[in-house]
Length: 313
Image 1 (tube, rainbow, N blue to C red):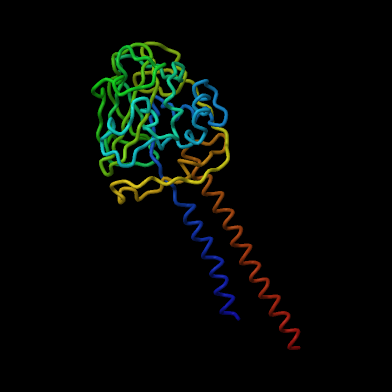
Image 2: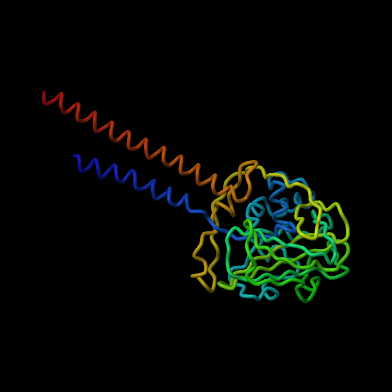
């Protein structure tokens, strides 16, 4: 009897421990442009359940809220540099992914970061997982019309800034360079192509050159005005999604799970804090269940022994 009770207790303990190990492992996703602020991160910071800008409201109406909780997941897993061949005109900001179709809305009122033409600037690409790879930053041509769907031909033919394996500081890749000599409203299109995988990530940042009073965050060296972003409101949880198969399975040895990509953060939390809070809550609940199960088992054993003693007496 004692051996069976010990085996049962071990079973009760071992299963929650496996769950604890899973919960404590941080899920990894990837990233988006932080300076100047991307459309995806702008709408996330406004709060996907009730965004403040007209453009983000329209984007949520077009594609739902989940895209903005997945702000760091605009990607193609097996593109291997074939960006123009794989992403259709009009769908550059979503990378052709239907989940993010709200980001492709052709509007002249997307919140924008004000930048000084030709100035030194430090671009920051928020990275929730780090990989080897290179960045290419393109800007739209003179005469760009934001009220029309963005096409590849709207971008300058060559990137104005390229960086291979830039340093990471405070959770973001930092790319120092000079801003284009442009004027008026434009869009900066970023491509992060991994060198250890065919996977690539994409980002659209709306900017205004030569004016102050931009309506979204993203100032850096070289300047740009910004308003303070608001914290997103919590929403219902959604199961994690998996990456589709790629040409390099080994390169996808990390999790694109719910902590960073899909989890709905509590009010006031940052994107990086969400996973910690979720894991802590799950661990606390699991430990409570474990201790309760063990206590019940031991109490039952004591009661059985007491009853047996009375019977023998």
